Image (tube, rainbow, N blue to C red; front, side):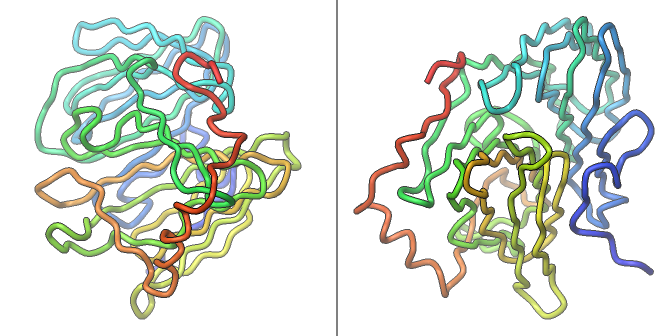
Length: 292
């Protein structure tokens, strides 16, 4: 049996209406899903949630989301580099219809789950914007569906923006074992966009945490994804002059929905250098509502 690909360049992993379609079957794992959908002006798309919960997250443009008798209007944003966005949550065993008057691109982040929660709207103003790291490790994290921020059964999802020349997802860390109070077991998708047009690129490293484990060193561009079922992931490197965006989608089998990581023992000391350095003055790129 052929092992699933771990680096999915843009245009190589679409299915049906989706530019990118990652699900447990195609990824060779159990819980996490990500779809990217482009709608033309006036376009509409309906899907069944099945055994997974989903968040509709505008990448560019806005849309209306209808599910469970609820109607949510997502204002969206120009693109991922200009603003935090609002979003909508849809439960398992439901149908969802997206309609976009002006068109746009939308991420559907999903996770297999047991509980059926209520459909809800997530306002941009309620998304915590965190500055993580300092110096050349500075990055911005939009914690729209982080554990403890927005209620889901299994799904954890955040956005990370790394200014050109900086490293994020650093020091390298992992979450592929269940260690109570220390480490969660979570499958993860990284979906990338790069500012500066088609010439923009970044780099993603995943190194094995076990014999035969995931080993990736990839040049990434807008529309690419990297699948991380295991392994030390990081750094995510933004080329000078090109801000790097990635959407992280995570889920796993643990009874508790939590993001607990273990730093690579050879690089964990990096965190100890952060208190003596300033945060990159280019951050935050924006705050909720699009204001810097």
